[in-house]
Amino acid sequence: MKLRARTLLVLLAIVSATLAAMSGSVAPPPAADEVSALDLAQWLRARRQGLLLVDVRTAEAFDADRLPGARLLADVDTAALRQAETVVVYADASADAGALHGISNAPSSVPHVLRLYGGIVAWNDEVLFPVLRADASARQQREFATRALLSRYFGGSPRLLDPGAAPTRGRSRRGC
Amino acid sequence: MSAPLIADEALGASLGAAVALGAAFGFALERAGLGSARKLVGQFYGRDLAVMKVMFSALVVAMLGVFWLSRWGLLDLRAVYVPLTYLWPQLFGGLVFGAGLVVAGLCPGTACVAAATGRVDGVFVLLGFLAGMIGVGLVLGSFADFYTSGAHGAWTLPELTGLPYGSVVAAVVVLALAAFAGAEWFERRVR
Amino acid sequence: MNAQPDARAPSDRAYSDPYLAGAGLGVVLLAAFVLVGRGLGASGAFASTAAGAVVAIAPERAAASPLFSHYLEGQGPWLEWLSFELAGVMFGAWVSAKLARRLRIAVERPPALARGSRLAFAFGGGVAMAIGAALARGCTSGQALTGGALLSVGGWLFLGVAFAAAHTLAPFVRRLWS
Image (cartoon, rainbow over all chains, first blue to last red; front, side, top):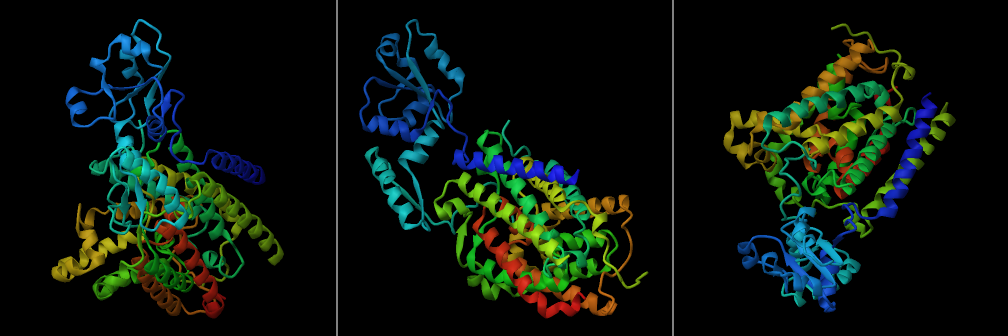
């Protein structure tokens, strides 16, 4: 009985670990209709044809801060939607599927409607102001160089983080 | 709804959860026999490697749980407190702690288990621990620079190595399974 | 205090399988992350209690201590999460022992070691562990177990070093245990 329980646990651990190694990242993967901020940045950098960015937030939020070349949902007419090949919808954080209703109700077929994974927050964190830890290895610093270039292209600036001085991750706990 | 479920500000719920989680913690430790100092030190004399088995099993289960719950969007890892890294105090502190552990035979958590089950030696470990904390707290100011040296914040092995989180998880599982196999072989040989 | 020398260590068969108990413990730790966004721990409860004791007697020294000042913020030293957790630990341990008929007043020691000596070493070991835990910001539960599960560099460092130190010192303190 004990041996069977142990064997089961070992098998579970091996399967789980193998799948973990295959998965790589601990963050939830983007859904089929989502695009990551970095991918979107590459599309914009490459001046991808027929790309339309639609902001589904309020006009005030749009005025305060927006993605390059984005249009407010209210200002987007069906003609623009018809002409677009890829429509990317974004909100503050991940836009929920309901935000797409404004687009889906358009009379003509709009081929590729995607949501920006993480919204404008992810755009700011990952594209405009990427963070490099001060204790990063040389290889990590080299890999960061491309992110830094991308950041400056869009008018942002890469940040250097001193991990010792940074606020603690998560809630403010007082030790163990 | 994404975890963590109880907000910091919900003090009653948070402290209630503390008692409940602690009760399960203490129950599991006592079940495993780690409230017994003589069983515990068996680890360091190669007689009984229960300490390593319990600790590593718990670590691996929790680690895998964290990985998958996070990946499935059920746990927001960014809101989970990761213990901070201070390289030099933790290196030196680890040495001193380990020395104290093999002399006392119980760590603070297992000493609570021992004390709650009537073992007077557990009570004395706790008294010494409290006395030590008072003493350290009073003199630590003189060592403030050392105390905060090697600060790397919430530094994880994936960040240190540049490896994907999932790869590190898999490596830890492999390490644990190898350690378990080694422990079984070793204990059988000693018997 | 009924203190017969503990001539034989409790039979291993009476205890749960360590892997299963460990897996159970892992689930509890995971539950902690899910419920309150933090892991388990122990030493913080004592640091907090020490802070509370010192601030009552010498408030300026408490505020000046990098260790105590930390626990005097927020909810204060007497509403420390870890203190409530350890109260739970004692209750859960008591329940388990009661169910298994393992409750007994005793001083666990090898027969050759006097009661007083064992208690003195227990106290001394506790003092040393406090120094280590204060410096490391945690002990086996907080740094090694919780930090380890979250892949913290400091947690793994502490885990490896503490166990290495204990293993290394063990031959020199054999008389304490046999």
